[in-house]
Each structure stands twice: as structure tokens, then as C-alpha cells.
Length: 542
Image (cartoon, rainbow, N blue to C red; front, top):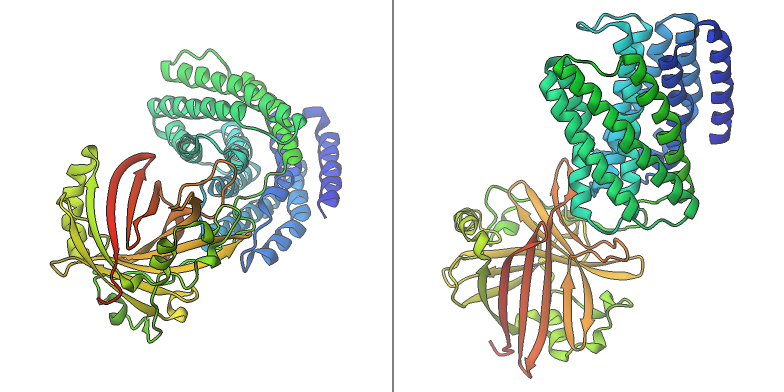
């Protein structure tokens, strides 16, 4: 199907050049180049979803593409604007497909969001192409500006987010920097459009921010490891050229701002249009086709709790929503062997660590909460909120205090996961500290602990990977440098699920025959803000 689309695209482009040879427009040729070659060129990257409705929609979009592209060519050859409406409708359905992917996707990973935003922006290109072909009058814009806007949305607004998303699929380092760059890339087209329409000052600022993001993007491109030498060369060459062409955009915008134009629109068509098409987009597309990066979550089987919190959680929350069942659980995990992987062998742990997780009700827990100095003012505000909510209620009092624990079964039909149990902890004032819903699952040969905490009208899930370190247990949500894994902390709402800039690690070790210690560290944007120390004592007769 894809090869057939390529042949049809080539024939359509040759036909357009032959028909328009006497008075060919470079800008028209550029927009058709994207429609006929670059749009189908990204199908292999975006059409690989495993969502329920996606396979049918993907098949329809691929099969309908040749007809939509053919009508786009007819719109320019015949000067009948109505033909361009077909292409616009096609791009709208591409955008709706992307929105459906965002809606149904369990994890809104930043790189996949970037890829899908490119499809959404393509619908803007379809509209401006229709406006040009149909000779629509839009505000004060002339036909050339409308056409160049169509070119912009068929190139940088459409393809740069997709290429940025593909980079995110393979980059392992500087993930926080990558996230900030991505958000700038995703929203810059809107800021630039507002600047062009309403404010020259905003236009200069938006182009400057966009240029900075692309320069940082280039830094990631040149520091990321690639699988193929040819793919690496083409992608890095594309990024280097883009750094040059975006600087000309800044020069042009600054000239318009000062009312001292140093570059004409016709010059920008060749510098920012022609050069970008053949020396930025084309090599990048070929390079990424060689690399063929797959989504991190392509083979993931992770599931999330379907239980969302109310305004208040508290220790009776599950009873109030009729989610409790009569199954009696003694521990947070039935068998720690279910978490076995190449990094975790339960038999290498101290026996009392295994006993604690499998027979949790036989243990007493004391805790001491320490907030980092920089976070303490926020923690004081947070404590009042958490006390009222009855969830994740961590005190600013630095003293040790006892936690009282109960474990209750949770209906799997309500929760959506298997063998779910709630570990409910209260303090000496009978205030609820945690209501945490525990489950375990396996994905790609590895076991994970899946802990859901209902929050007001949402929930937060920590997916923790276990490691053995000598006789100690390490549970962490921090991602490995060698690969993504399922670990992470995620916020769930009815609109979808997204990763949070939080990470946590537990270190549990046995210090006596009947006593364990545990240390729980948490980081926000990579900066530690919380440490909780636990003393866990074996008391089978309590």
C-alpha cells in the first residue's frame, strides 16, 4: 500500500509540474511536495497503534490518502478551490485520529504526544491550503501570505514535532531538558501565528524561543546514540542545516519588527522553504526511516486502577464506594517470586524482608518524615490539604510516630487489576495517612509492583521495579538508562494518564532477626524533597 502511494504521489507531482511549467509557483510546489511525499512518509511512524479503534481508522486513512492527495493536485491545476476541501477534510480526520489516540492512550508519554501534535497541526495546513485554493479572504492576509501559512503548517508545524517525537523514542539522557524542549516546540506554532496576526513584538519573542528550543534540540541530536551511521549522519546534517535556516527566520522577524526588512518574502521562500524541504526535512525523513525507532510502550501490558477518588478519601473510602470484598489478604504480595527478573531474585533477600511483604499484618510500623529544607514551606501548606483530604497525609512534625495498618480486599471488577488489596494506614490521632491499592503484574519478562493511590477525582499510580542489592530490597520508579521499562509515577484522570515529574525509591534491609528498616526517598524534577524513615518490627501476636 505504501509503495503504491509513493508511485501515485510521484505521478501526481510530475503531472503538476508539467501542467504548471510555464508559470510554476515555488510555494505551491513546496506545499504539494509535502502533501505528496512527506505526509505519506511519516505513516510508518504514526500508524502503529494498538488501541481499540485505531487499526480500522489507520487502514481507512492509508487507503483514502491517494484520493485526497490527487484532489489537492487538482485544486491547483484546475484552480477549482472545492477540490482542496477534500484534502482539508482528510487532514481533519488525521487530527481526529490523533486526538482519539491521545484520549485512549494509557500513558501520555511526551514523545508520543509530540508525534500526535504534528498530525493535529497538519489539519491547520489543510485549512490554509483550502483557503488559498478557494481564494478566501482571511483578515488582512493576501494570497501569498495564506499560501506561505499553508507551507508553514505542512512543514515545521507538522514535521518538526514528529521528528522531535522520534528523537524522544531513542534518547535516554537529559529527559527533563527534552520535555521542556518538546513543550516549546509544540506550542511555538500557535505563539508565532498569534504574533504574525496581532503583535510584531510577540512574533519576535516567539521566534526567539522557538529558535532556542531547536538549538537545544540539535544538542540532543548530536549527543544521542543512533543505531545506524547513515541514519545518524542524515539526522545530524538535517539538524545542523535547521539551525542555520531558523536563524534567517529570526533575522526576518526582527527586520519586520524594526520595519527595516533585510530579507524579502521571496528570499525567505527559497531560504526557509526550498532549503528546509530538501536539506532539512528530506534527510531527516530518510534518516528516521533508517533508524525506525519504536515507541517505548509498544510491548507494554501495564494496567491501571479504575478507582478514582472523591473529594475526601479517608480510611472508609473503599467501603463508601462499595469496592471492598471479603477476600482475606495477609500481605501486600502473595508471593515475592511473582516479581522475579534478571535483576531481582527473592532468595537473595533477607528472609524477614520476604516475610514482611507476604505477611504484612504481622508487623508494626513506625515512621519519621523529613521534608527537605527548600520544600518545607510548601509542605506546611500541603499538610493542611492532605489532612482534609485523608490521603498521603505526611506530617511536618519531625518526631517518630506509629502507623496502624489494616489490609482489605478490593473488587477486581471495580479496580480493573487482579488480586488487589488495600493497605490502609492511620496515625495515633486516627487520621488516615495512606489508602494504597496494591497489585503486581509482569511485562516483558519482568515483575512490577503497581500501587494506586486514589486522589480527589483522579488517582496516582507508582509502578515500581524491584532489585536485590546484597540482602537488601530496592523498589524504585526511576527509569533505567539502558531502557524505558514500565516504572514511573503516573497521574490518571478520566481524560487520560500522563507521567509525573516525580520519582521514588525504597531501600529495605533487615537489621535484626525481628526488625527491618526502610528509607523512602522522593524527587521532584530530579530534586529530592522528601525522606521517610521506617522501623518495621515483627509482632506476630499483636
